[in-house]
Structures are given as structure tokens and as C-alpha cells.
Length: 299
Image (cartoon, rainbow, N blue to C red; front, side):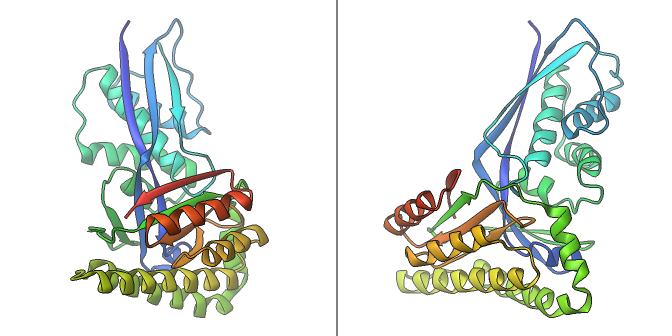
């Protein structure tokens, strides 16, 4: 039986969510171990196109490009990426689906074309996507992004652990963006501060580590920046009681710092652990708080 397979991975925002909408930088990290796969197979009937569904739009976008809109196919998704948690599920599923279609028809797919087709599908999912999710889900390196200015890559070599905990509550990006807008000029101070914190984080991440002492100092500073960013996000009315509990718990268990990640009002909390021992303690703390899922990415 004819088959096409496409894969992609998840992502998480390290810092800069929300302020990125206002032209400040953001840093996102690919989560290479959290994957999604799309399988395309022959079917008895034509592919049904649903213009309100991201996956359907991604498949149709690829079919249209290949001039195969009337093909008889079906798809199956196997995903480790939870939805509505700020982990790039819609961008990742679009990437996997488009790769699967091209694989099914044994067509060559250049990275540039893939990104273009993914962004076309993402416009349906997010109306005005920044392109950051797609870029990070396509990358194996961390990315610094500034709206309308572009991207640069960051090599992470902290030898530390990023612990990602799913609070089990759907994030609500739309409502969170509205909360920030509703603050009007009162939001400016926090948005500026988030921009400054992201710049500071960039400087630290791109600097060299000479010895163990320097590494510990660097991780401690990054943690401080993360926690400071969480405070500003709280002032923008996008943290909730449960995410604040997760942040507090992570720090009490030895994390260098912690914050919410993504749209807010739920979703994920990320914490930075200097070593394996702290990472395990932070994981335990998150479990006791009722985390629905926990992932660890070495950074």
C-alpha cells in the first residue's frame, strides 16, 4: 500500500511571549524529543477539506501546490504534543502533514518551500502568526525572533535542564492578548521590561562558559531573568493561581528560576535546573502540584 510519512517536533518559548507581539524580541527552544507524526495512505474517497481545521488546511495547501487537490487519501496523526499549551502543536502538525504529502507523492521538499506552506496553513490557525512557532518546530537550534525584523540562531551549551510542566489547563492566547490590550498604556512598562530581560538573556546565552563556576553563575542569572519575566507577565494579567503555584514550587525545590511559557491563563510552566539532582526534585514538586505531564530538555 502506498504510504507517506512526515514528522516534526515541539517547541517552547523561553522568554518574550506577549512582548513579542509589540516588537520586542523572544527566544524559543525546539523540543526535539517531543514529536508528532503524520501518515498519509490511499483511501476510497476524496480528501475532505475543512477550512477551519489547521491540519486539513496544511494537507490541502500541500495538495494544491502539487496540483493534486482531488486525490483519494486519508491521514493518521500520532502526537506527543498536547494542544493549546504553547508547545507549537498547530505548527508541528502542519509541518508533519506537509512533509507526509510530499513523501506520499515522492516529491522533493525544500526547507524554504516547507516553511512557506506551513505559514500559509498557520494563518488559518492563528490569523496573524508571527512565524516563530513554525521556525522553531523546523529548527534544531534555539531561535531569537523580532517581529518584522527576522530570526537568528542561538547555540545552547548550558549543560542544564529545562523542566516543562503541563498544568493541565488549556492556555487561552486570545483572551490573554486581550487582557494585555485592555491595560492600554499601563502595559507599556512591563512590555519594555520583558524586552530588556530578553536582551539580557540573549547576551548571557551567546557568551562563552570558561569553567564550572562561570556555568553556575550563568545558570543562576538566567533563572533570575526567568522569574523576573514571570513577575512582569503577572502584571499583564496572564498568570493564574495554578501557574503561580508551579513557579513557586519549582523555586522551592532548587530551580534557578521558573515562569509560565506561551499564551498564558494556563498552559505550561518552565523551570531551569542546574543539575540532575535538582531536576528530579523539581519534577517531583511539579508532580505533587498535579502536573498532567512533565518533559525535560537538556539545554
